[in-house]
Amino acid sequence: IGGAGSRGLPVQYVVLAPNNEELKKILPVFEEAVRKDPTFPYSDVNLKLNKPELVISPNREKARDLQVSVAEISMALQLALSSGRYGYYIQDGKQYQIIGQLVREDRNKPADISQLYVRSATGQLVQLSNLVRLQEGVTTPALYRMERYPSATFSATLAPGKTIGDGIAAMDRIAARVLPENFRTTLADTSRDFQESGNSLMFSFLLAVVLVYLVLAAQFESFRDPTIILLNVLTALAGALLSLWLFGQTLNIFSQIGIIMLIGLVTKNGILIVEFANQRKEEGIDKMSALMEASVTRFRPILMTSLATIFGFLPIALALGNSAESRMSMGIAVVGGLLICTFLSLYFVPSLYSYISTQTRAANPDAAPANHQSEQLHA
Image 1 (cartoon, rainbow, N blue to C red):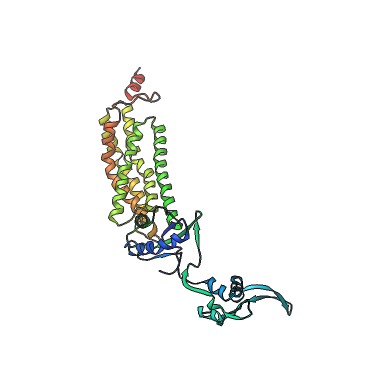
Image 2 (cartoon, rainbow, N blue to C red; image 1 turned 60 degrees about the vertical axis):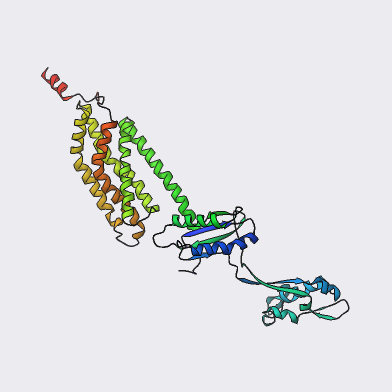
């Protein structure tokens, strides 16, 4: 809702200027460019140039001719308009301030200054309006600073289908086109939180991949098997992005969290196939036979665990419950990624295994082959 204040609007873009004068000059130009951009249905700026201002400057030549000092002019204006406090008085046990100022009716309009008089050196009363120049204008009610620079914060809502990232990119394009080189820009409030969380999620995603790879490398005592398993994550990422695109969702914080969750959810498909195939190779079976047996044997566990997870996330993807629409993108990313990865992993993982894995695997010394055990029993 426009006019309700800038706080709470998704896009918070701050323009930093070298001084207030240059900021006031560029402010209307930037504001007009933001309003013309279709990305922002409504925009606002916290630095308003809407406060009426009356600048009074003494006419020194006339004051000299009429033998009136500038100090007398300043004193007359101060006594009449500055609301100066001269002292206190006590009445009925209460303390009151003594304020020197004209009443409101006598100082509402610039023309009221003609009612003020000042005494010249010759003792004559001179009308104050003959000794000063009046210039009406506008100024800002408050000045803002950020990072020790004068600043103005532009706030805006987003058009349907646009994300905070799209809004920040649109603001950057406007800034590159409108702002001089000595201006800087930054983000505030919601936009800054979005940028910081996006960087943190990217770091979390890379950290999750590295940690999973190291854990799998320790578990399998190999660097090839974890590579096969983690490459299967690519199918889950493709499925998540495709699902978000098909259902008109964005790559926001919730969907990124869902993609990070997919790293742990889809690696179990590759683990089931690779681990079973390695066990068969340790028993002396060739690689392709072990791979085919692992794919057929592990099909049911893969299907059961994947369907259980998909049905668990389905209420989130369908936006069931109060305030569930904000988490819908996370459910769609997880469900779509698992659906596509579940079926593609049955072909993708065996294909990678056939190329990357070794032909044979060293037998476990603790587990003797079956034919060797029968020979010992016969002996």
